[in-house]
Length: 386
Image (cartoon, rainbow, N blue to C red; front, side, top):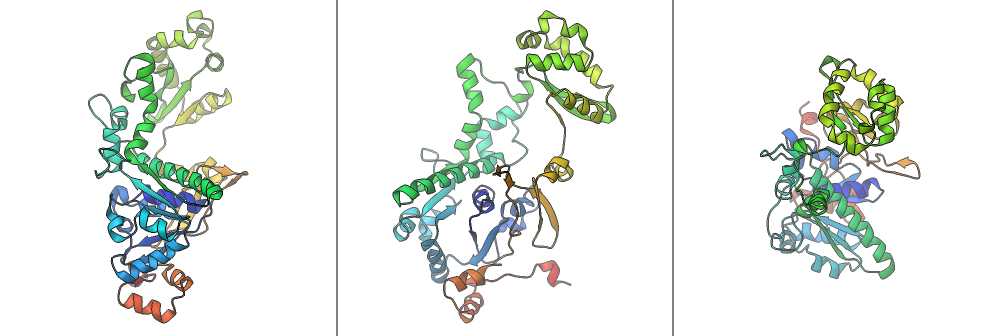
């Protein structure tokens, strides 16, 4: 629903022709509600859609013909599912030795490889939920960070494999997985235990590495995060807020000293910051070059001036005709951000185009659709109703 499509999204945004093979009736992700309602529009822009019945001989043959000319094949099914359909790596690499085959899994090879996993499963068993929630209350992160992270690592592996292919002439099998992605993300906490001998506490109960590194209440029931993470920043902070006694206190001159007196520093700062509005406080912090942040909701980012100024948001039209501004890839290349060249596709929007490229005539395509081997773009239900 997210991990596999993220791989395709990254490659598509970077300029690859990405063909999404959907079942007849379309990817079920299109119809998710609640927290899953945004999955399809977010992770499927810049792709083409072909709808095929892969359980039929003819549908399977069409997909195999696409594989014959493909550089990359990405799958995100449970272990063994595609082998049973004839789309395993061994079968496809025989047809196309240059193919880079990417499997997005719950687990890499090992005792857990057969298990079914989800983002939440990986977060729970990989230590991320433990670190996110308060002690005794594991809590998954507020976004599908492991699905997206696993997709990113899959794309990295694919690009590396393509580079190797440019030298060897042959493709290879690559894989990334949810559990191992989670382990990588919490690696800093594993390392903390190795270095200090003390296990990392959950983030809400952590001992901060800095004295000022917290969320503070300001006027109008708003909050602002403020960080002071170096001795030079401390000096600038004290000067900006007329804290002369702190600036002259040798016990506060170093980060180690400030951390030791954190319980002395924070109450005074909380009283001080309550006198400011969020805008006034952030303007003051920005002027002296200190780290700060408003506490934003995801929907607030649609109006963020920075994202709107530099291509950080892409406006697209969804299948039902609605428009949405969604984040672009968080990279630039030669000063250019990667944008939109195709809206998220409708079910089978490109079936006719793709089948025609395989030398199917219009009559043959119509016959395949009549027998539900293939499906051509359908009008959204709300449009058909009136």
